[in-house]
Image (cartoon, rainbow, N blue to C red; front, side, top):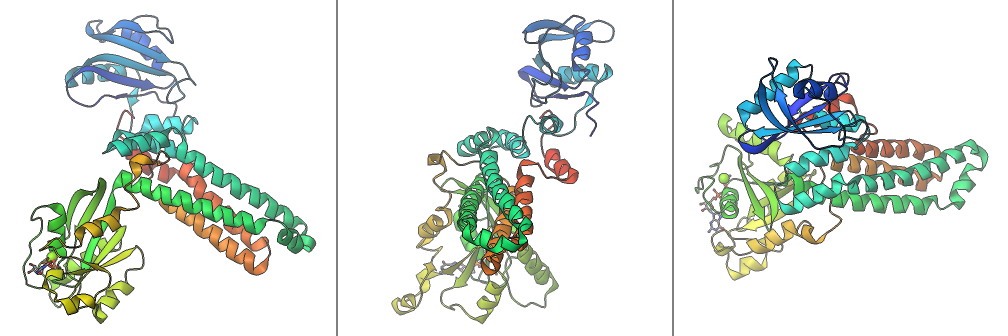
Length: 444
Ligand SMILES: Nc1nc2c(ncn2[C@@H]2O[C@H](COP(=O)(O)OP(=O)(O)OP(=O)(O)O)[C@@H](O)[C@H]2O)c(=O)[nH]1
Ligand SMILES: [Mg+2]
């Protein structure tokens, strides 16, 4: 990315509208606007001007807003041209601006410049994209809180706590002889404990924010004929998947987006898991595992009449990565005695029994968004970074408890801090930045 270039883009959505905005950022922005309008422009004024083409004919007219660096969104000189909304007209105006020396902005390049000029940190820049794309009022409110820096403030508070500990631990290393007493007599242990508790709390909030943002991915897994597709259909409210009594009916992965109590959920129905000689079914099962292993939560369906057999145990041994909820199906086919033998979630897609309770269980951590003024929006990468950080803090704390020495813990604390810094972008590679900003729309 070259910040020497002046970039331009249509900032309003494509199509017809009362007004259309073209945004420019960079050191040539003001000069380009002056040539375009054939006039002198001032900062901080609402100025009505004609926009000319290269022959001097008027392309459009409208309002010009100028912002002088560093007092702008990007931190550079910024001009906004508010003309009439209309695709052809906007394209002509953009073409003229490019002719005058600007180049087309890449996806998210305005936000990226704002980030590099310290106008926003990375989590805030991401919150802009999430705000624009939010799919519910709760998500929009949470994104706004992130944009205002709520999430970043909490991450910074954790970083501060880690730095305090690191300074102390590293100072203790300089007094190697007395180190053990020094640390043992201090409140290092309590500080570590409080750091773990705070990290856990933020992680939990970030997880909620991520689900609010991206939805929860819920895979339905189990042996053939367990009733997986029936449950998908029940929750989706229509016959999304084929249901038959033939084991191995579903081969492809079937996805449905639904809302459970206002929580966005991506349900994934998969092929029944078993040994199979059929190459088509084998491929279905391979794809099933691929989806199951990426899910946020797995519903493991077990035919209640068959009970939890060894094959089910084998399936669960492979399900270590995410919470697994075992669900017994076909409750309507059980007699009283059989019912007594089952403890846990029991449902029937024929009678609807047990499904409300299951939904309640699935959503209980996520349903009070609207009441939580503290919820901020988050992304998967934030959650992963918080997990990495927490893992290092826990590891460091264990080592400290065993050795009462700070030396071995110091490296873990350093890595915990680095993981947190990647959230706000203080420690982030160019590749990752490129990946994040390319997901933004052009003009943002
Ligand atoms: N009585 C009753 N039958 C059910 C229930 N759920 C599913 N079934 C029946 O069980 C059979 C298998 O159901 P599916 O939903 O296709 O099962 P599946 O787990 O998707 O099976 P595969 O796609 O082969 O892996 C069908 O005949 C369903 O009608 C239920 O709650 N009660
Ligand atoms: Mg099926």
